[in-house]
Image 1 (cartoon, helix red, strand yellow):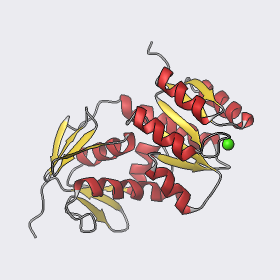
Image 2: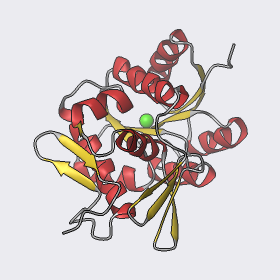
Image 3: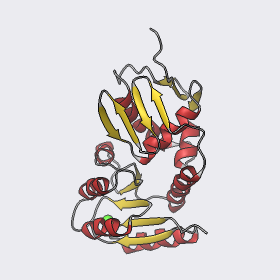
Image 4: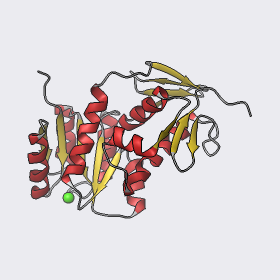
Length: 234
Ligand code: CA
């Protein structure tokens, strides 16, 4: 039997840690936890978790700094940030610091569990996408988790890889936002829909010559997105 996937929780509120730990262990995940940011970073270095749940408000270091440090250590580990704030700027700052996604407190434990399940379900299933793909002038390696364009190599995060892989598997066909959210994030369609759009923006910045006039990751209005591998003649 494969070793259980290990999830690191960095959070100082014991009742939240306890609730998450119980639910995750019940689902068969291994759980390690730290109540402070520095301790969390050290634990991540020592234990190389498969995913991280990181609270923004910690007693010693702020969550953004912890996130940046985790990202430096491990460019690909999925990081979900817990935030008590609902301001859009905090979320954007979290995503800029390298978080893959955020959940606003009070959150539903079931929603977080669904995300964790989706992460490992996608990551463990065989993919219909080839290992190396050219999208216009950009080259993507799904094994090295990199995208090279204009002579610059960008590291791709977990969700960027998964989203791109889904679009490549279905290249030329529209893929709905709801399907993306459900398959990659394990979420039902709803108010968190902008999650997908945020990742599309990040990918366009790396792939497109003119991110505001995309030639490859195309918007299908009122539906979702469609990937064009070749540059369309205009
Ligand atoms: Ca906290």
